[in-house]
Length: 417
Image 1 (cartoon, helix red, strand yellow):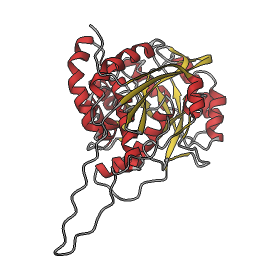
Image 2 (cartoon, rainbow, N blue to C red; image 1 turned 90 degrees about the horizontal axis):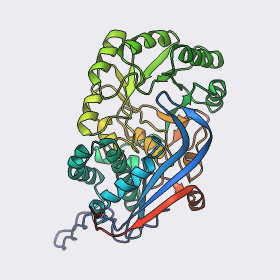
Image 3 (tube, one colour; image 1 turned 45 degrees about the vertical axis):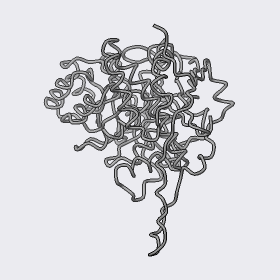
Image 4 (cartoon, one colour; image 1 turned 90 degrees about the vertical axis):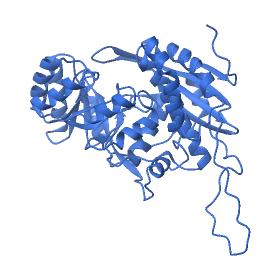
């Protein structure tokens, strides 16, 4: 799971101009990273208590790790499979179907690889009626490709993203974070945890009915006082009239942004909600595809755009969306494992309009126990790993303990019909 040293000869230092009369050194060959092997792992940790959501509940922490090998270099990404409970089975099948298009492909230009895969598979996803699972699988491959490129270039992801955008100045050593997942249960305990960790804001879960939602925000304010910034996430639970009413009721408690108050495939209604209420909106974790991301990022009232690099857009499209003209800050969604969090930290560090990184306050061994990466400081920021790629140092023993399924393939034959 850990990356070895870069392949000898792939990297070259900038040279000096040759002296007159001397032979000019040949230009170094462009970097190529042909994908020789794909390893897919399903990791799972059962939960002692269900975590309620407005639409369902979480019964286990799960993720799918996708590792690409090129020569003796490895890059690992993550594909989000929190919902539904059987999502990991679908992800295995989808990644197996995508496998022939990835093996042998060049991962040295991850955005180009992502664009090519999306173009090849768009028609399949349309006929299948499942763009979400496809993008979730592609996000894992894209993240792995960026990690692989970082190993080859010996550079952190944030540096690669900034250089690609033409920025070569210093990048931040840490980025601001907020605590999420507060409510409708364990409100006091989780709010106290956020304060103890020095986090500068918390996000509450709403969408459980007026009485429960108001009880959550009142309890947070009783613990944290009137000045702590509080955000509210409805997970697309409301229709427009309900959202307008709840934004007014909860807004009286100083909510700074409302995340996914409406279904994310109804941008016109979101724009209307912003016009009627003047609230600041956040969202993007369920917006799939470049065109949809571009439209969503331009919504009036959108204060924070929240693509998920493990779910909806990979690293490539998350970075592109964060660089579009506008005022929305890039605050990636993260409710997954270590690679997803590390990607979010690196993306914010490189963003022209950096926002906040989401840090789930509930226990998650897949985020904290399988690798060493971003570190939470006493000031409520997350350090940006300086190692190559995502900057994660994996614990192979921990990864093995949580692995429930693993497959490695070097074969390019497609699945039988």
